[in-house]
Image 1: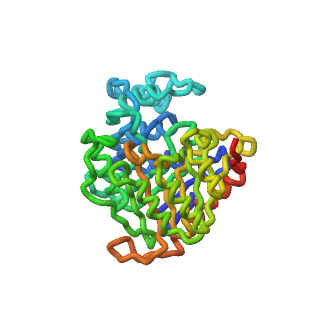
Image 2: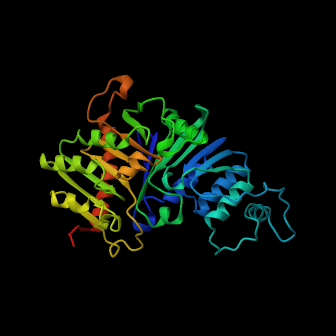
Image 3: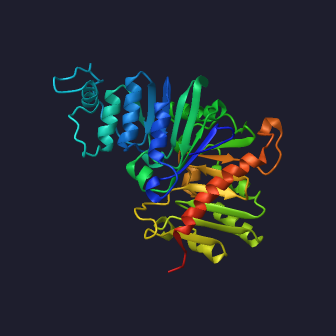
Length: 387
């Protein structure tokens, strides 16, 4: 973990299993353990048993938990009173009641097992109305009804809450300790509870606002409400020297590739890494970017054993802007999916009501942290070569 902006922004890249500095699963579990009153969660998948156990433990100690995911659920009775058997400890009895079984250490829980256990323990779990387009990954802690409960925090990023997501895929997480960043995510969660999803949903009433966290401007943008692709292009147009990226899915149907090519024609240095499988798809922007002089790399599983996917959605512009979050660079992600991105930093002075004053040193620290991870990935990659 790296802390920025006086400890109010925490950044994680990993996983440890692939040589990254951070244990992503532990970061999520620790964040959940810190909940005192409420957790509101919107996540595409939940298959990690340690994360599920952290939620069960939070529910057991009285934390109110609401969750949206894209999976179907198995409704079950609430958790009955826990009475240990003669050969059980109190903890063993509690775990058996939660999972409705005697624990088998090597048994892997299925998605349905986990969801049933959450429902059994009183977690309010709901599915979205169109599973194909629900792609959020965030947790609101101790912030509900636009009220901070003294411990407000927001965890988000590119990481799915699955064993693959936290152990085999290259991902990032960011935690914000600021209620002003929590607010737009609470509004997003409230829209989900109203039953509006994807392109058919009601639009946010408020335009995205930039808040200042100890000199770091933070701007949150949601898809499809705010057309985040335009926000990414807007940030790219501020580039004066170099741009680095690590993207899971980058299609030629987005406008981001066109903007990238124009920046390259203007003489800027642009390089980045794409997932080896997604980058080979016929619709991918890979060859088009390569042919225009952009340095494109694909991770090499021989030098990074155990690699599943490059799953980042990460861009660093010059030394002062970082763009991250859940949104892949595709037209469907921008137009139809439930997504979020956030922009950290600015090269320009901003008025106080627009995210200023800017501390360029603190913005640079964040950009350098994520660029270092992109550099690490590229060091374990091969330069793209057309077939």
